[in-house]
Image (cartoon, rainbow, N blue to C red; front, top):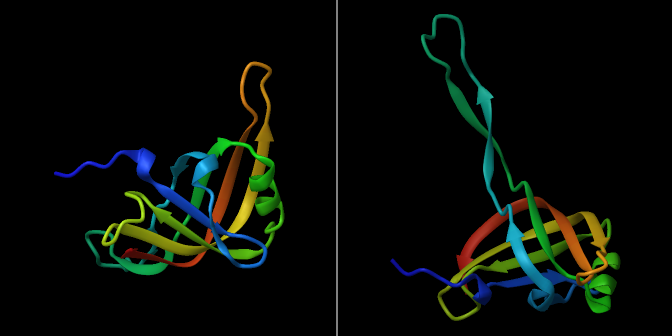
Amino acid sequence: MAFVAAKNSVVKLANAAGTVTDISAYVDTVSGIANSTDMLDATVLGNNSKAFFAGLRNGDTVSISGKWDATLNTLVTGILGATKAFEYHPAGTAASTPKVTCNVIVASYEVSSAVADLVKFSLSLQISGDVTHGTN
């Protein structure tokens, strides 16, 4: 089994001009890149067990957090309310490594300060449309 150090992960988000930009230098946590499918209840009278059909796929949300920077702030505040490209490379960007791509909308952006710590940010991205699992 080949394990991968999370420090090699790469996160990219398109800026206001649509250019996909590497924001990894600000990020320390990425989570929630989940894929789910709505389950439609198809149970009818006479069934002994519940029956389901697959409905729409749902990309859910992506949560990102890290160290705040004015450059990152400009990128994020410039795309509020817009649908933008997102890429996640859990094992880095070398050839043949996994890559997840989708479109996202900034659902929330928070900046926080604690007196004995760095300024931090958290970002919630709503996935809109299909999530593609491929390779670099």
